[in-house]
Length: 238
Image 1 (cartoon, rainbow, N blue to C red):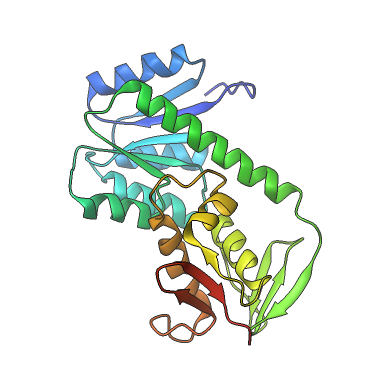
Image 2: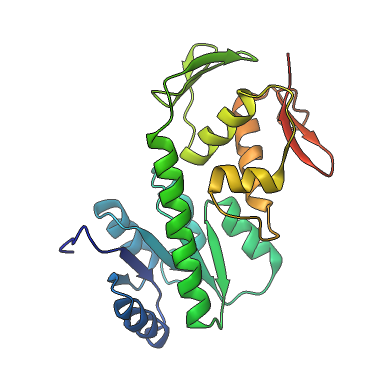
């Protein structure tokens, strides 16, 4: 792909030609640079070798399905926003997509204006997070045995480096730098993901679970990040 840095780069991963061409036509009309793949394996190879600003990912793909593609690219520490395109209507498929690292989903059949609005929302959200990361001040602190270096965006537990994805890092930093303060799920959505609460906070719960698996002795009985029932979360004071 010849990259024009002034244009948004979109990867469509969709095996249905009619849907793929409709997406391609409308995205080009929005002045996006568009590339597409038709199967999961080709999609992974392309994502690992090229940079994109957003990925539109169908679930039902030949080779590897979209959920597996999402899982693998997140394992490779690729944080490009992913919007799942799914014909499946069950809630479990949508939740599973979010748990595997997708940022959003649209159920088929979808209206093109809705999808374009979601693309713009995810691009805007991602930019806000990146801009926020750029202006983070230099600060180091230790809380509950967790060493956080904000300048290096590094976390150590028992003097060992532990990897945290960008949103995981921002979330644990916010909680740990404000011991005892209760954050609602809605406020965490706005503070960490950079958009207004629209009625779905499951991604907060998913990220909290991932963080607990890394910092708690027993993630099922957490003592460092506490659930405030019906409200949200807080980090323990000591």
